[in-house]
Amino acid sequence: MIGFLFGTSRPPARLGARSAAPVLAAAVLLSACGADINGMATSSTTVANYRPASLFSPTGYSVSNGPDGRLHVTAAGSPGTPVDRLEKIALARAAEYGNEQHLKTFKATPAQTSITCGKTKTYIKGERVTLRPVDYRVVAIDVMYGTDALDPQVRGTRETAETLKAQLASETVPSDVQAAAAQEVAQQCGR
Image (cartoon, rainbow, N blue to C red):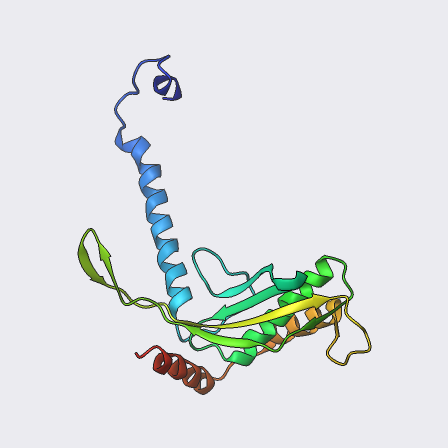
């Protein structure tokens, strides 16, 4: 088939059911994965875990360069994720990043909290389509590494990362706390 594309061979034979079956199976599996990923990203009955955000799921942590050489760390979670859990996720990632870079200490700014409300309508090929909105809560911190160890806000990177990751792994968020957090996001987004 590659030779045909470059003009060095004859056209490929017609695809039969046997050769199309793997392609069809892959398409079905990928669509199933997409449904699960979408469901996990938008469910308000789950809480964010310690994992990186991705193109498919905005929930999780992300790291970028911030102003003045600081590191900007965000943690996003479903509507049912409380702010304090997101702050732990952001701090754990900041500490782990510092440890990966062989930096001993860090200091974080106070967490800034926001809510991102998803679209409910869009246009596809000129037709208005109703969407299930993807709302989530975001916590952001700016981090400086190697700061003065005498400052009471300075933390050790390795110890902080280990402690917060262990807390996040063992901690459960009660359903009433999840419901209250989700209700706050729903009110903020006008749902």
